[in-house]
Length: 114
Length: 111
Image (cartoon, rainbow over all chains, first blue to last red; front, side, top):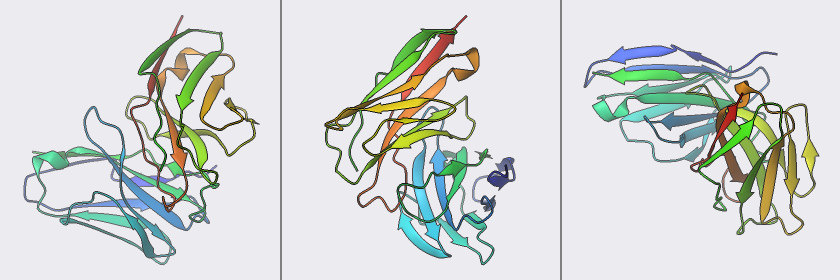
């Protein structure tokens, strides 16, 4: 079965640079969630989109922005990167926002900021 | 969202059942209990979820107490590949679908 695709899988950037992470949800899934997992920490919710509209927002820095496109893929844009942004970034998708619908995660993008 | 409490770590012998407990005493009537696991920095993997009734799928069983204040995830025949961090998550209410991860239980399956 098709899964959530994230690209790139690994990314190395310098401080103050920008990065763009991409997420391709499972076919027919219209909802995308982004999570950040720092070293030794648990995943933390950043932001979500349903039908191309932002549905919820967590502790996402103002330097980060995201959007969902007409084909339901999503991009997380990160600017003025800081050392503390080094983390795993996971995208998850589901069919709708309903709590009874499972959320499936991608393999993640490992971002390293030097 | 309701808070969950899990033991920080558990051990299990290969081939035996692994029973992972979770307390969620403040759960509301419309909140679901979800279980995910994460194997060494891979993406969290969905295991099972339920509202009131016990649930079973090809991976595991979920037993929810009648008062819904606690639940148990059962892996019937644990293998070494089941070694992972297991997260019990209560999802619903005003969550707009997001998952709030707590500390989880590190399950180690021994040969």
